[in-house]
Image 1 (cartoon, rainbow, N blue to C red):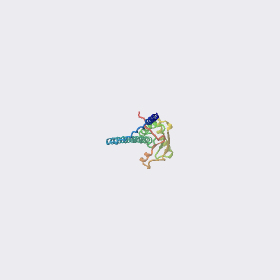
Image 2: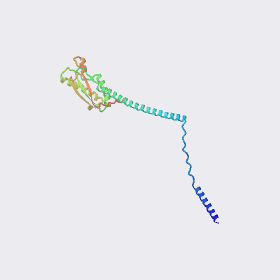
Image 3: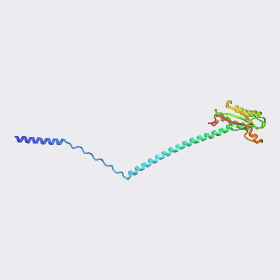
Image 4: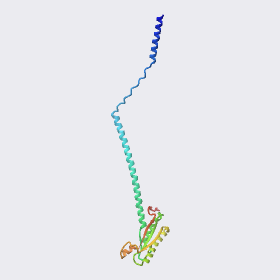
Length: 213
């Protein structure tokens, strides 16, 4: 009887050991890290071609942007040069000298033509003011020549105002025989000295061309 109980106890012990061993699961196996396959030559060439195309596109875009920038800068410079040239041309019109016959203050045909050219420039540039200076040759007294020079300046002003230029934009002065542009006592020198000169006193920095009708 005692042997039977020992045998039963031993059997139970063996069953317990087996059960405990069965409860201990093995840890899950870790999958090995795959080793990337080495790229083949076709893949390498394709990547290089793609890089070259990207570089080529980037270079073309940079060149186009640089060309556009240079074109804008050239356009600005050209516009500024054209404006400066035009302003210089218009300034020359306003400064054109007119001449007179001996001992006369009447406007000649060539003087009227020169004054006619000034009118649209003055009308288009309303901030411009001018001074007309009358001059004579050396013949006659100082007092007479100052008066003659003033009559010549006044005649030019009257013509301009008759064409619509406001009087308050034009002032006159006479220098008589005091400021000759030609030295000499012959008719050639005298003819050059019988004149009206024009000076832009204000508003001559940015002259604009008159609008065409």
